[in-house]
Image (cartoon, rainbow, N blue to C red; front, side, top):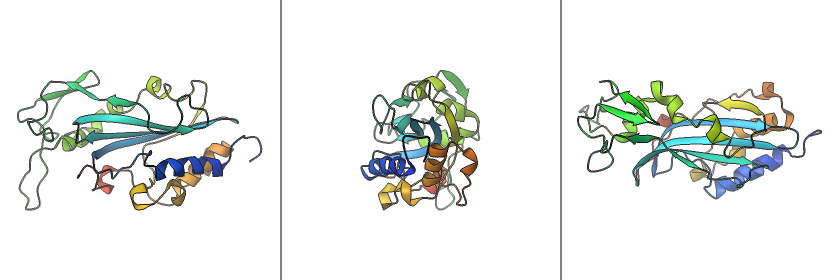
Length: 228
């Protein structure tokens, strides 16, 4: 495309390569319960970058993190798996002995320094197959907290600029989109979304982003996430 030093093809080639290597946000990762996502895109005539935030409960640690995955042609540390931001910093012992469920009697939790007093709705356990309430899984609590804690889950601008050049202008930010599924060999270029994103990055024309396919990034669309 005239005026840029990169192309839609080179953008998609980088994203596909990292997805093939599972160095890409995988929302049905068996070791991560998905909770939330966000995508921010940046560009100028010479440079492009995309930061995808994958917020989830890592069931083998256990830990609740936001992992930033940056891609682009101007990244100091290169594209792929980036920094992890630990989101819960108290109180101690907020999980039960298993590490998978919320400790009975928990009244509050501190997310990134902000103490959140938990409501009965947020502490309500999900119903099991027979309608009988189950234990409240850690992922259930963080999903229940989404309406009021989403901004705490997301990276700050300073954290994003830790992987994206400070002077690269932001062009697009999305809370939902049609994500790929590398586990099932659906690469970014196989979706409608990522080619549209590449076109916006190359042209600088946000009006070209007119998806016809529905977004699928809500955690409920990835039931395999965290189940291993």
